[in-house]
Length: 209
Ligand code: ADP
Image (cartoon, rainbow, N blue to C red):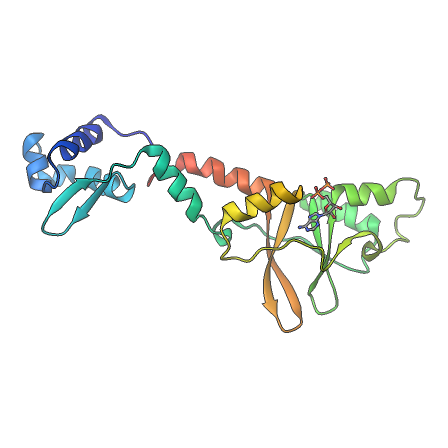
């Protein structure tokens, strides 16, 4: 986040004189306390300054880079997860390919009659199954999918950074966000490389960094 001129000045004043009250900062800048309020709110929310009641503002000593890193490390899966696209085990390879195009996704999740996760289909899984095959309607996806228990999953309260590490380490494009039920794992979302890219872009729009 870029600080305004006035915010830079406030940080300098607090750095050299903290703890210092809002009133005293305002005096040094020849401004009213009310005028400074939004700037002080932004600087404390973003972590540059800290405020203690009846003591005043003081400088945290954290750099912009440290503040961004702290922020990223707190991102949770549920803040960014996208809608999962799900097919049944009996779905044909042909219909799975159509679904991938229609829904504009690169990974499909496969579920059984209890709506629990049993498999996953990537673009290359479907390409591989299609090569040399005349009738893609005749092959069901459960024949070709990657199946449980070999599926990497995550849960809504997991850290997005841990999921990003899994995507890199396992060399996969995405994984399902699941909820545990007595029948098995129910898919409630998906996190993909696009999700991570979106979180990365969002960082630059964050007002509170
Ligand atoms: P692509 O195959 O299109 O490059 P991926 O890299 O995501 O896409 O998939 C590579 C392989 O890993 C595929 O066989 C796929 O079924 C499997 N796969 C994809 N996601 C997962 C996952 N979350 N857990 C386990 N295996 C997965």
